Image (tube, rainbow, N blue to C red; front, side, top):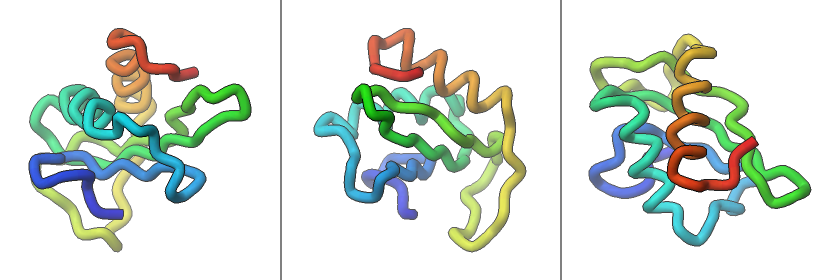
Length: 93
């Protein structure tokens, strides 16, 4: 899935598809900041109670990857994304 916006460094996949929040640009900036200038992919899944769950995050990569390229998942990056979003008040489990 392509990154949200021209300056996005991290590709965010919103599940269910088309169910992204109205302030997606704010979410994108926070997620990009969690990657500290690196590239990666993150999947967020909307839960029944309206909160979001970070279900996967790739390791921080120094260069942009191809959409078809498989990247290693990282529990540390998933936790970093969750912490960054929570610190800014986003509804994340």
